[in-house]
Each structure stands twice: as structure tokens, then as C-alpha cells.
Length: 289
Image 1 (cartoon, rainbow, N blue to C red):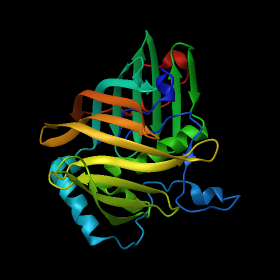
Image 2 (image 1 turned 135 degrees about the vertical axis):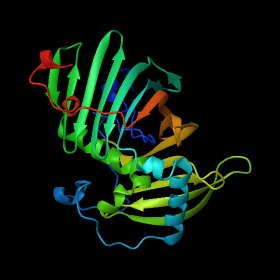
Image 3 (image 1 turned 90 degrees about the vertical axis):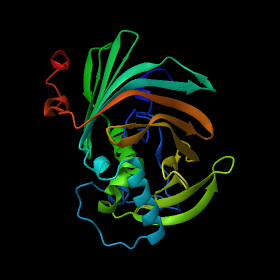
Image 4 (image 1 turned 135 degrees about the horizontal axis):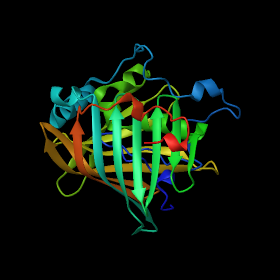
């Protein structure tokens, strides 16, 4: 992984499922075989604004998720509509940390996000609103629309986020929730595992502490440019409680068993007004603020 933040996971999804590596040649790995020429419409992520589909979910899995929602703050957590997070993003390569970047992340639920990176006197801004996005790089004085692959990565990040699980965004996409079982999580510790399965067969397993009910991991698979499935994993740590909301302030991302990045939050604000102008694409690079 390079030190350029645009090639690294975006540092937000409060409850912090890492945003997928923008620009890397990965595609969603379906959990079953697909036709040689799949229907592009069938594999496109369902918009969050679609009407909920009628599905039958596992009652035990629903109870586990409900306990997780209560553990992170219950109605106080659910009442959050916008967040501003600040911290440090650090990529890893062959087990060694690389040059870190400071970031500020603005999120307005469910699908607007702007992340600003600063490192080596450079400033990079990645902004997404639903199915659109733009990218600014001060070092090259460039402002451009995000390519389709980056938009798809952002949409996939919404699927794999803890916000989606806990706030129920997956319901509007027609996903189903099931109970997988308990998994070992260290000495005398167990995690309850629930699985989201989307209509295109993409799945995410969320491990939730059996005792503390706090989310511990998110696991899913993606295909690389050679068509091989690669395991992706987010591990949540350093839970802190702020204004009645309990969050992981550290998220470590692993790819094929190796650490790929770390997100460490210094501060997170809730429901601070975030102006719409932050997400609007500027007319040119000189107009970026």
C-alpha cells in the first residue's frame, strides 16, 4: 500500500467500518458462482432510499443486534444525524507502519461524506454524495469526478459499515439477517456472530461480544484483479463513551491476514451542523475551501 491517502481506506463510517480502498482493483466477491457476463444492474448496490423489502430475519440475530445498539448508546446513538471526526490514518506495508496522515471527516447520514487528508504539506479531499463523488489534490492542483470504481467502493463501504448494521440501513436494501453462532475471541471470551446477506449474495459477518455486546469485528470477502477472493477484516478497539455514545476510537483493517491500515480517532463530535456546501463540487480547483 502506498502512502497516498487516496489509495487507502477512508477513515469513517462512525462505528467505523473502514471505507474501501479507493482506486484499488477490487470488486465485490459474491458468495456463489456468477454468470460469465452478469447483468450490471443486478450487481449494482441498492440505494439506501429504496423502499424496504419484505424479508424474514432470524429472531436471535435481531436480539443480538438490539443488544449491540443498546450497548453503544441506544436512542442517543440512533438520534445522531451528523458527525465530525478528527484523527490519524496510518497505512501499513509488510507489517510496518508507513507515513501517517491527519484527517478530518464529515459525515451526514446516510450517504454523504467528506474526508480531508493532510500530510507532507499536501491536502487531499474525497467527497461522496450517494452515487456521485469528487476528488481534490492540492499537490497537482486537480479537481475531478471520482471514477465509477471509486463510487462503487463507497457504496460497498455503506453495506459493510457498523452504522448500516446498527441503524438498519440494510433493511432498505433487501438484505437478510441471520445468526451464525459463537466464535472464540481470546481467553475466556466469545463473540456472537450475525450475518447480513444481500440480494446479490454478498455477505458480511459481524462479531459482537457475548458479554459486553460491543461490536468486535466485521469480515467479508472481495475479489482482486486476478479474480481471487481476499478476506477483509475490520477490528474495533479502544471503546470510549462520549455524551452517552460508546464508540471504537481505533479500527485496524486487515487484508488476507496482514494489517493494511489503522485509524485512530482523537475526537468525534455529534450533530454539529455540517453545511451542504462542503459536499457540493466546486466550480474549479481554485474554488476549493
